[in-house]
Image 1 (cartoon, rainbow, N blue to C red):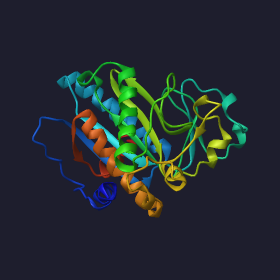
Image 2: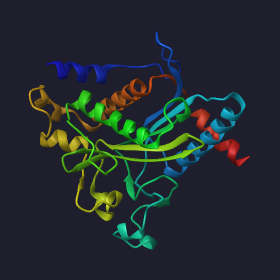
Image 3: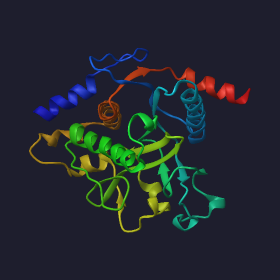
Length: 278
C-alpha cells in the first residue's frame, strides 16, 4: 500500500514550469530545462551543452562561480561514441549505419540513445562540490540507484570495475562525462521504456558478457523487490513509467547535489542556437 501511495504521489505531483523552487536551506541554484517529453536531436543537445559550458567558464572567470544547469530530455535513435570507442564494437558497416553516429568527447565506449530513454545532462561546477571525477561518476550512479529504489522498489547496484547502474546482469543506466575547467557536461542515460533492439547492433559500452535492460522490462517480468505491493506495477503504461521516472530523477538529483531548481523555458536554449549562428 505504501508503494502504491508513493507511485500516486509521483504520478499526480506537479511543479510550476517557470518558477524557482523554494527551500528553507541554503542550496545551490540550478537552472532546469525540463524537456523529458521531447525528442531533441542529439547534435542540438550537444551544441547546447558546449555553449552552456563556455558561458559558465566565462562566468567563473568573472565572478568565481556559476549557477548549475540540468537538462533532461529524450533523443531520437542515435549511436554515440566516446573517447575510448573503436569500430570493433559496432556490428554494422559505418557507411550503412541504421542510425546516425556521433563521435563525442565524453568518456567511455559506444552506446545507443532513443525514445523511452531519459537522458540527464548536468552542467555543474565541481569546484563547489568535489574536484574528483570518480566521486562525480559514483554520485550520478547513486542518483539512479535511489530512483530505482524509491520509485519502483528495484534493487540496483554498481559492479566493480564498471561504470553505470545494474540490476543483476542487466545494465539499466549508462554514464559518460566530460569535464572542462571542472565544469561537467554529458551525463547519464536511463532506459525506461526503451526499445532495446538497437543495442543488438553494438557491443554496449564495450562489455561483451552482459546485457542491457529497462525499467519497463523489469516491471513486466516482475523482477522487483517482494513485499512492497508491486503486483500492480505492470498496469502502468509507457507514458506513466516515463513520468514517474522523470519526477523521481529530478527529485533525487536535487537532493543528492543539494540544489534548488529554477525552471527555464526552452526558448533560452533556442536563443543559444541563434547566438551561435549569428
